[in-house]
Length: 225
Ligand SMILES: *[C@@H]1O[C@H](CO)[C@@H](O)[C@H](O)[C@H]1NC(C)=O
Ligand SMILES: *[C@@H]1O[C@H](CO)[C@@H](O)[C@H](O)[C@H]1NC(C)=O
Ligand SMILES: *[C@@H]1O[C@H](CO)[C@@H](O)[C@H](O)[C@H]1NC(C)=O
Image (cartoon, rainbow, N blue to C red; front, side, top):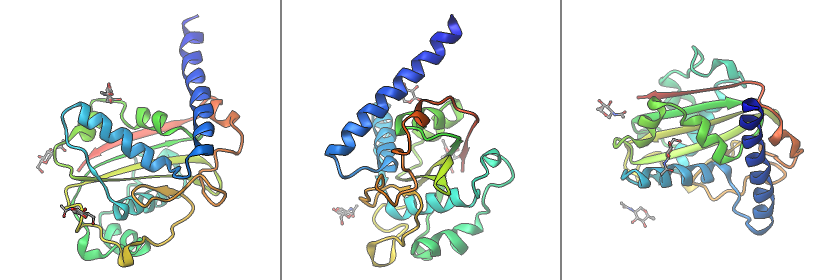
């Protein structure tokens, strides 16, 4: 009975979220799960008397590059596959059109991978699932944030990444020409991009059953840096 109850609740919640999301997408063209995750992060921070963080599109784009460094290997989250610090200047920034001279200190990161697509609310819950990740979430060291989500070749696994920085919001992670280079597939925060459309990696229209299917595997980790 207990097992039934614990399974049924997330299933109901997922179904409800899926219905709400599809209803919302009909009315709202600004449909970006990475932005939605940043909103959840900021409301949780402000509820805990921490500052609201600036959503930096350059940092968001770099978060998507960070995910891509894992090459879809879910089991490498928290393992040796963690990108090298030098990747920020050598690959992530150039790929996004972020000016290398404006890269700022990364003060925390949250990374998770799931076999199935999750709503931003569910992603928040598995990204922030222990004392360490909660400390990263609420850290006073951060001034800005960038978030990203992507699938791998049109399907799962789905990676979610949140990078925090202590940079000055308007002068750090500056993007050449003000618009980050296209780095599809995937969605990142801060760029007003409608990301649920036909070209997006995160095509949750591909069968709502995926949302309610049991998660086959998952991994999450928080790194304070
Ligand atoms: C913030 O997130 C943490 C971790 O999920 C949760 O325990 C806490 O209740 C949240 N706070 C608010 C105000 O929602
Ligand atoms: C904040 O930054 C200080 C100084 O770099 C560091 O010692 C501390 O661990 C950081 N706090 C968090 C929560 O990351
Ligand atoms: C940052 O830029 C925005 C828009 O360009 C502006 O409204 C805001 O005042 C700036 N903030 C700071 C701290 O300079």
